Length: 193
Image (cartoon, rainbow, N blue to C red; front, side, top):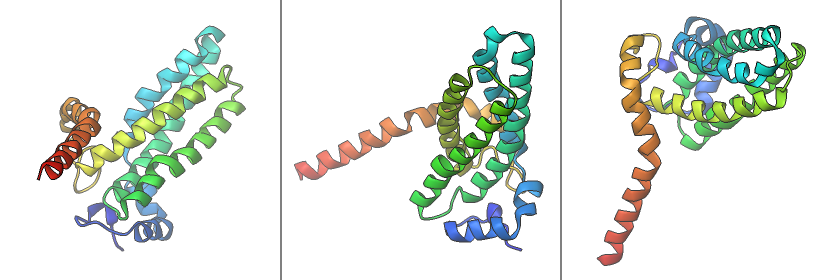
């Protein structure tokens, strides 16, 4: 069995997806990313706490508990998929899966869960969750492509990952401006030559 999460060179998105389909237990059970699950539950549950705050303790408790359990379970599986796709090529296909398709499917299930629990202010909670999902998906991909928040043989300790987090967050936030600056600077050099 091929373990794409341990491979050092880029792999094809289709091969990674085939491996996920052919060996789901390897991904969703053995490689479940508990780090991503734990962080997601800690960060997403407060969104639903705020969204239901005016509805009373029972509504808050149900919404927060449902979101914490759901996001921990699903984000652990999602983190396992991101870990396997983090080096897959073509990059645009990996990005489409990691940033659009998988989060949209997971948000749909999240919506259905909260609809079944009768959550009030479902629209506000889901809008916040959608915005958070986009940013957290991009950040998870960024972290995992830099060997952080990994599980398995390539993993560092969770404490080590957390120590690196402030620096990684700063690098993540400044990534686009730095990249634009480099592009602008290189185009100016070519124009002057």
